[in-house]
Amino acid sequence: MTKRVLLVDDEQVMCDMLATTLGRRGFDVQTTTSPAQALVMAGQEDYGVVLTDLQMPGVDGIELCTRLAANRPDLPVIVLTSFGSFETAVAAIRAGAYDFLTKPVEIDTVVLALDRALQHRELREEVRRLRNAVRETQHLGEIVGASPVMKQMFDLVQRVAQTDASVLITGESGSGKEMVAQALHQRGRRQRGPFVAVNCAAMPETLLESELFGHVRGAFTDAKAPRPGLFVQAHGGTLFLDEIGEMPLGLQPKMLRALQQRTVRPVGGESEVPFDVHLVAATNVDLEAAIEAGRFREDLFFRINVITVDVPPLRRRGNDVLMLAQRFVEEFAALNAKRVVGLTSPAAERLLAYGWPGNVRELRNCIERAVALTQFEQITLADLPEKIQAARRNQVVLATDDPADFVPLEEVERLYILRVLDASSGNKASAARILGLDRKTLYRKLERWGAAGGAEPDAG
Image (cartoon, rainbow, N blue to C red):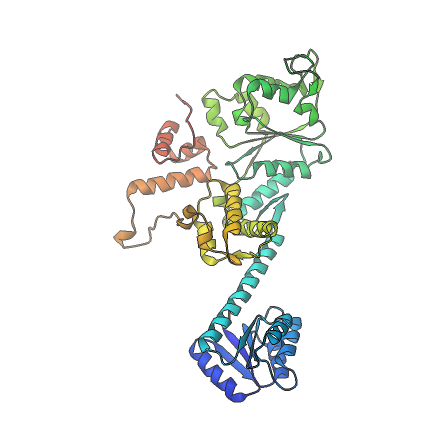
């Protein structure tokens, strides 16, 4: 932000003295003894702040504040007067002044007030820029993003939504897979129908079977009345099977038959019930690895994986992190009735440097915590969790001649393998093919680095 100051005082001596003193402090000061001329100058040139006397002939400081607030609401005004009182301070603030100083005043106090006013203006402009960016950013339901990977995903979802082909949504936990499923439903031909979701990992096999296919009266002890399953409840709409990779193996043949026949047989029933749904499934595990391990049926995989939509992890979305953070700041500031409007630069830098293993869900929780804790209008570095405060960009420097900049060969290997795994969206089979490693070797390396992410199936 420019440190140009427009100084308005009807005493030329005061103008010259303040201009000289502030000039030594790094401010570019232009002066005028005419409030009317000040209005013209403020409309023609870009000043960072106006410093004006209060008692002046003709247009006084209060009226100058009022007119500047109407014509240049972005320009902070500091009123300086030797006639200090509570009433004049209130009048100045009501007229739109940012601050009020009483003569005689120390130059350090003036400098501090000018710096605060400039920072306030910079903050308002940054908040406005981020808000505009959020408004102009492409949306997919509740998902926002401007990064290339998100634009590609948005385009694919828009095209897929107009079909009835089964969709498999892949991506890490917390990346927004259910929100993508809802966007597919809202943009599809079945948007007037129900959207029914079930977590396949949240219940045991017998209960999940009854939940999906329904049951007849007397099918089991507590079945005192017939109940239609979720396939039938979702008729005419979308059925979302979350965490399908965790579906019990014994239930998978029944799922495959239902999808092939487009009918279900309720538990304890003898007749088939037809259904018509758009099937959308999601997983955060490597289904190809699960197939190799015998935990997931290959024929079911091909049935649900007609079209794949991969949700990129937050760490691959670049400055989307800051757009999402700004959106969450506004959301939680409103919920908590707090005046929190953005992020300081150090805080933003750490948000970009952090790896976000918990993805958007983790970022949302981080900002909710920061808004609750902060005592300022901007979230500071101290408001962030310690692990995020300590984050640094993870890069290997090659364009250097300083031995201190180099790292051990194993660290280069680790960073490269993790980068390939990231680019493969966590798919170990795909990453192993790119790296020229067998899956067991890759897994052993990941396990040694604490990045295996779960038990590796026996591929032998």
